[in-house]
Image: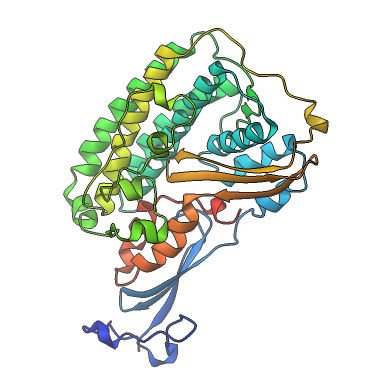
Amino acid sequence: MYQPFPPDRSQYPAKKADGTLDIDLTSGKYLKLWQGPNHPGITGNMSVELTVCGDEVVEGKTHVGYLHRGFEKLMERRTFIQCFPIVCRICVPEPDFNEYCYAAAVEELAGIQAPERAHWIRTLILEMGRINSYMMYLGGQAGSLGQGVIGQWTTYVRDLMLDRFEELTGARIYHMFILPGGVRDGLPDGFAGRMEETLREIESILKDVYDVMFCNAVFKARTVGMGVIDPAWLDEYGVTGPNARAAGVAKDMRKDHPYLVYPELAFEPVTGKDSDIYTRADVRRRDVLVSVDLIRQIMAKMPMDGPLMCAVPNVLHWKIPRGETYIRGECSRGEYGYYLVTDGSGYPRRVNVRGPSYTHAMALLERMIVNISISDVAALMVSLHTYPPEIER
């Protein structure tokens, strides 16, 4: 018969030389459970193999491979322009950041410079995508603890922002709008007014989210002091973004390594101090408000005239000189980067994508998941805010 977990954790099995636990599953003391690979209870198409003792997790091993993958190798067999339909899929909820990083890497190696107006529109698109990603996260974090109504609210305002994406780019999810040399088009007539209406609705919904989610006694009881990331782990595990800022470290590529028009915008990275699930959620909630303010600044300062694209060679026969570069920036989950190598041919020689999810959803999660309750696994995973396609790239 299955036995409850021992009161003394020293009774947990020791690790073997290969790093696995010396567990006898026939003893009745331990049990294997799977979290995932379906979406509910996990941040996408991945899974965690849990070893539990009673309702307490003894070990967690992440498993990926359930989703489309191999993006980097696919890109090495396609021309530079053919890579754009691929890079979007590396992060479905925030595809535009892949477009920017890839386009910027190609531009640097090809020796071309996008026009100033294109930089403003690119920055606008990245902040719109950041809001969309955060809205998906907030709904997921609340849903992991039984607050389904929050997900309905955040999906509603996310859909409003998708309306703005649709009228700007012609698509709702995969936009393929940021190209080497600039962007495909300018802002449509009346866009600024409709964007302001969307921003006001986001601010209104966030007030309700704060009252219902962050002031909820059950949510606080389940998240305050839970899933703490030790600040000493930040460099050890490469923790970036809100996961690092919730630990009091103001890591933000928009400030640390400015790009696009961020040097011309006024903002400060949002930080916390307790580094638990609650603080990480609150940092992201406040970061949405920062993005709302940034979009307003962009709309007020953006030049309405000027070129959107610079001259580029025939993209069907584009050969880029030999070289290598690394382009990085701040997505909603932290540092995102593209390492691109060219050899003078019409194809990328090597592409490597640095997505925060690889570190946060695997090494960090496997360390943090030990000794927590089964019922808290979903909340912990969502609090790290990861997207599996970045892992299976």
